[in-house]
Amino acid sequence: MKRLYLFTAIFFLLIGCNTKDQEADTKNKIITADEKEAKQEPDDVKEKEEKQPQKKEMESNLLRTDIGDLTDDMDVTIPKLEIDSPFAEDGNMKYEHTEMEIVEEYMDGDGRIYFEMDDYPIRSITNEEGNISNMTNYSDAYINMVDGLAYVLPEAHIPSAYDLFVLNPPKDLRDLEREDYRTWEEATNLERGIMQIVLLSSQPLNDLGTLMERDVYSSDQFDDIQKEFFDLGKPTVLIPAPQSMMDMTLFENMLMIKELWEELGKFEHPEQNKDAFEQLYMEVRQEMNHIIVRVNYTLSEEIHG
Image (cartoon, rainbow, N blue to C red; front, side, top):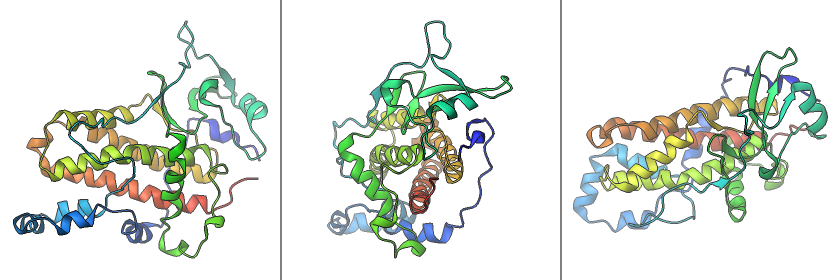
């Protein structure tokens, strides 16, 4: 069924997902830091860690990927794809549609509107009264519309992103089999965007945690990681538009996480405010763990039709 309200500027307020208990249970299942290294640490280091429970908790809840480990000279920036600007030379949007036009011309049988990266996925949508226009992202990736940069996960890592979300179910969904989840191809633009951005951002987030564990709060790498999260949280970065009822809640969740990324990125003098910075860092990690649980829920639901 075609849902015109999906393209207005007014979104539902966040509805409680009743997943707190399940999320807390799921956090322990998400791939953790290398325990072997911890066992080989000298006794004096172990004593120091025992006196710092917050850091120990931080280590135990890491979202790990297989993209690589922190080295002294590694590039900690998030990969991005350059795309054409959605703006014409006169500064106006290249493609403008009304709510009715975008639905009638581009919505498929599953209620999805999607544009490839080379087909100007950011469109201006005007309501039927003609008095409200919104920049809307109809791709499956986060896009900085001003800089013309898309946060696109390399295709080779798509299976890893999908597995991260479907293999970490909450307690009440642990009986589900893989075939009980919608596939990557069946996922909404927003679900796919979340799966991509979580995997893309988890590596620099892990690297930031490693620097903090090493008590390195002032370095080029630290600054570079902060800049990445500040850029990711900018208002000019558009999240894929919600196109289902469940998308609406996920969209609100991601707006909150996006604000946390920006806050993490613009935090000043973390070396002088380590406790406050670590608290913020842990909040970012917690919410990114929670979004894995929430997307696991939505992927287990049939939303088309």
